[in-house]
Length: 388
Image 1 (cartoon, rainbow, N blue to C red):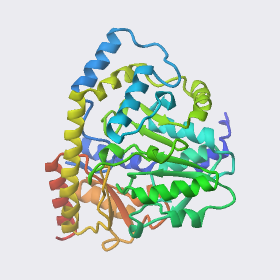
Image 2: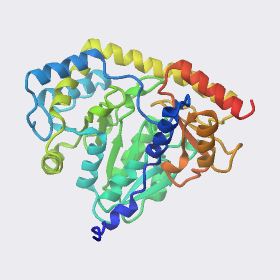
Image 3: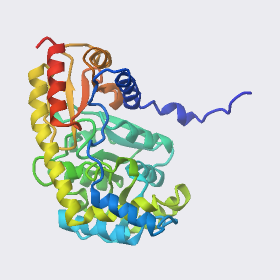
Image 4: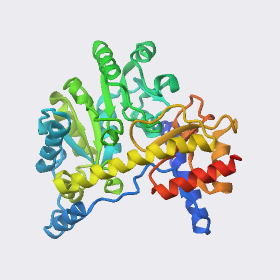
């Protein structure tokens, strides 16, 4: 029998190479190789005991029914209160839309904002799924080439230069995947002002905002209530598989986002929502902050260790848990470099081709989501492999 013809948009969405690499690394590990995983952007920490306890209580209490499409009211209030505590922002809980992870949040936002043929500006490199969220709704993601000179981030000048007649808005992450760099506050304010002048939207991904390493970070929501901001319980709260995130949307758009949520996925996991309430307790908060400090400690170790091993790190990350390293002194092809590093030194990293078209052959993304002793061993293996 002939299978159904796939939609044209399906062909525009490329495979996620990071996941393919992970499968190969796991296969080597299962074959007995001592693989060190520095490829997947997932914390090695798990949800802390207060959250697990809250999940068990919610299950035993029978909290398994559908919730409102925008999420349970106590969680929306808790998220809003956290913006007040961390960022001194007065956010109306009614503006918060709880979603099935940040991926659902960004999909929802693109569904609401992107018309067929509309262009959305992103950085190149950037998290690959972001451009696919735009493509999934027949928009055109436009990658703006960025490099070490701008810390791999968008600048006001770059945005103004690339804004065209079909540009509808911009989707930016700060701190960002794969580079771990954040947009300086003054640049972000200027970017938002430029987008506002052009009647566009600013969609800001703050999934790594809680993992800022060089001082307190401020949410983009401080720049006005016309922004749309996404966040998640996956990274700072270490709940990747729980699939729980949120949006903060302008007051006038809450109804539209609620309607889309009702129709696209009904609601986020009820059990995960009830469990997430425990994330905002003092006990859990102390755990998360200790873990954030551990990520900073790992950052401060792995960046000089990689440089000593022979890899260039052109920009020190100031957030998240990624290092974007330049391997061009050793190979003209980061994909081949990553393959050989995995097969010969048993260190799993991701080549730049997953993240865009701007010099992907030069770069590798490495994560520091492993214990310190594994990071030290990985740096030693890389150094030996490179002849250092």
